Image 1 (spheres, rainbow, N blue to C red):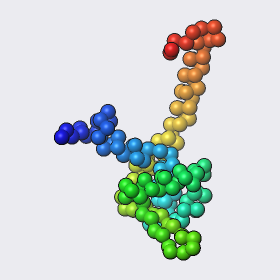
Image 2 (image 1 turned 45 degrees about the vertical axis):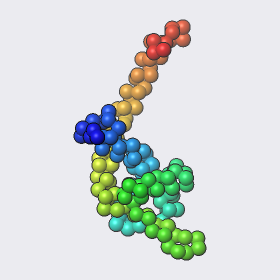
Image 3 (image 1 turned 60 degrees about the vertical axis):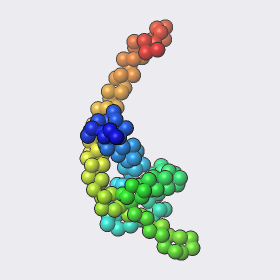
Length: 138
């Protein structure tokens, strides 16, 4: 059996790549942030959905299921009618909040520049390919 070299993002077995495949979505980052704000406490599903604008019920369920499967979130069900379901970050999940927070900080610092670069790139591409010119990217 061949093992992955540490940090080799080109290798599907790379731990970093595997983690990014699991937690690299906006919804995961948002859910972890909301749960971290409650830590070490719990939050109910409906409140979590309310505090994560734009997420559908299905996407929230899928995200929470994945986080629970990975041991990042704990789920507690109260046997009421209907059942009250509570979520909280585990210790492992709380340890993920720091790196995700650093990524959010980086985005806050740099997204305006990235957006500007995108607009400049599009303007330059549009000027190069004008209405009568064939596209060079084809």
